[in-house]
Length: 296
Length: 107
Image (cartoon, rainbow over all chains, first blue to last red; front, top):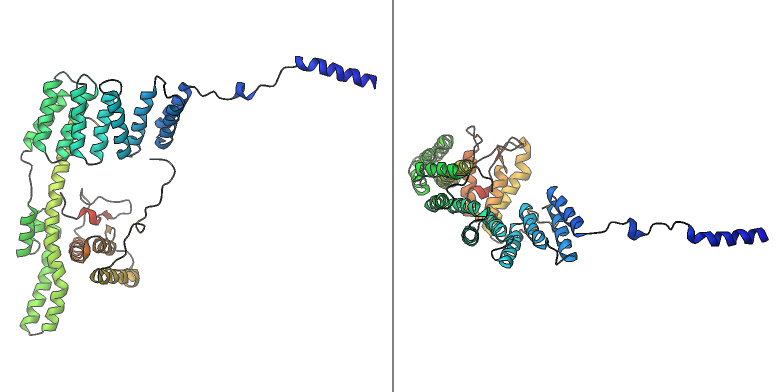
């Protein structure tokens, strides 16, 4: 009994001397600005844009006065942009740009705001955003890019002279830029393709109304033209023969079935001419993009 | 963007009920073809969506007049002259992509 007491006393005596188990605070991960930002950047690099947005926003919540808070705000917009959320991206970039005026991420945000609006098909506002970058920070690396962006926005808005004038503006503003030669090539390409070849959808429709299928031939669709000519020719011939034979019921049935094909041939010819015009513009657009050698 | 799935927006989710009787007649005829006639010989259309699906969508979205014109045009284009191009890219299924939205006379 005494031995047991002595042992207990000894145990109590030496207990404080034993090394204490590590506390959670010592072994757990301490979230610092750097760790939080690295985590967000890692998600961004892996294409996990939704999670990246969450982590950048967590950074801004935990460290609102951090030195890199502006960087995080800009990256929130960029994550939305890369994730295809152009509406939210444009709003985020606009907020960052308005907050910064002409410093920090203003030019970057203005440029990406322009790109987001361009993706949304808001060409006028995209052009204004690009103009803003050039006007507020012409020395920024984004300023020449914004001019190239505005030239393509003008092209997409079917304003080819505007596209050319932006490229000329690029050359006069940044003659020493590494892309100047590409821009000169693009201007030459635009000049070579002016005016842009065009087929009239109205003329195609009228042609097919007079001679079924001829509008398709005019729009470069030989096979469709031949098919339309044969199909409509058979229906028209069948209807005419039935009328000559005084088989008015048969004429009404054949004519009734043939009528949608006749009208469809007119519509299709106009559609073929429209597609031809779109194809020509797309082709030139592709060549310009290659010539500018820049991915937006 | 990768992330939690939002509310589903399926092709039937935002579809409004049909009210035009002419439209209903055309849609009914196309559905009858799809359910009773088309399965006899199986899929043969060289386009995607198929001509009947194209017609159904065109009539539903653009009304019977424009829908029928678009469908007639499509039927005349589904021939031996069919070939892929910038207007009709070739899909992995071997069919050419040609939705109604690409045939609206919009430049």
